[in-house]
Image (tube, rainbow, N blue to C red):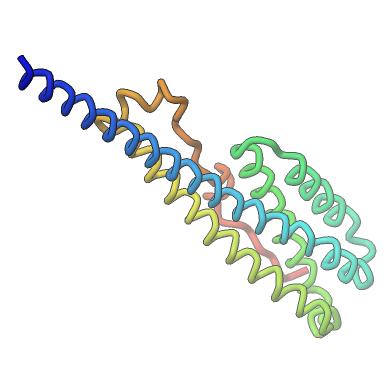
Amino acid sequence: MKKTGLIVLAVVVLLAIMASSGYNNLVALNESVDGKWSQVENNLQRRADLIPNLVATVQGYASHEEAIMNNISDARSRLAGAGSIADKAAANEELSSALSRLLVVVENYPNLKADANFRQLQDDLAGTENRIAVSRKDYNDAVQVYNARIKSFPTVVYANMLGFGEREYFKADEGAKDVPKVDFSK
């Protein structure tokens, strides 16, 4: 009887260690996803902060392109006010599209393209776009690892009970699959 009690105790202790280890692993993966998302937001904010300077520089040369400037301002506001990951993704795509239209306008102003401030802002914006792409990839990779873990056995048995649900990927808008039309003939 004493031997059976020790075996049961050993099994209970082993299960407790495995459960706490699994829980701690889920906490670490969840924090990793949150950290990666923070980097996405950080880079989206960096881009949003650069845009007013870029718009102000372009406005000096292309003051009659008011509609594009308004589209950029509206898209930037929507990105700043977006709450969910899906909303941020949609607002990000809208802002990217508006910036693309702005860069098409810039082609009509050779003096603007030669302006040192504009070139610096354009380089900063291009670097930020690359940072956003890397941050989105890192975030989606972390979400993939996390989601795979909570869906795999034995974690799936207790993950939902402990409050660990599936996380959302940062997906591109449906319109992002279309090739943009660029016309420099104007």
